[in-house]
Length: 96
Image 1 (cartoon, one colour):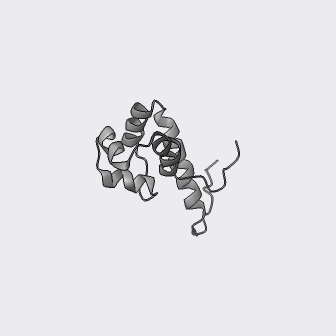
Image 2 (tube, helix red, strand yellow):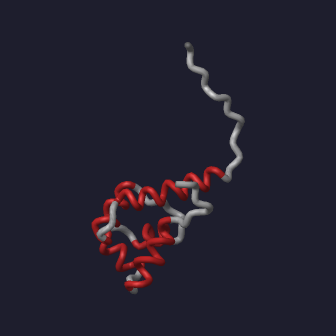
Image 3 (cartoon, helix red, strand yellow):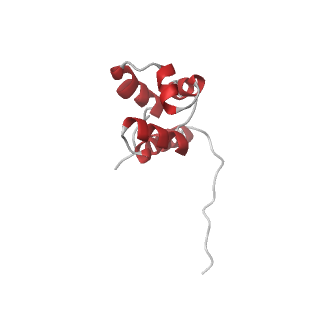
């Protein structure tokens, strides 16, 4: 599978594919997931990452897999990191 260009933040996916169609508010989602409204708002607005704990909560609530949430987060994180300037890295040479 090739690299995705500018993947969506998993919070955007949560909002557009789950919360909006079901007309679930941020407050209702927070109550269902056992966390604060502020935390869900941060995820939905792309300011907070999906952690392993949140992936498990979302999977239980939405009947999805935790791996799917973590895969989305990793893809987003890698794409963001790929846009940053990095120092020159010299490859490690293993002794023969």
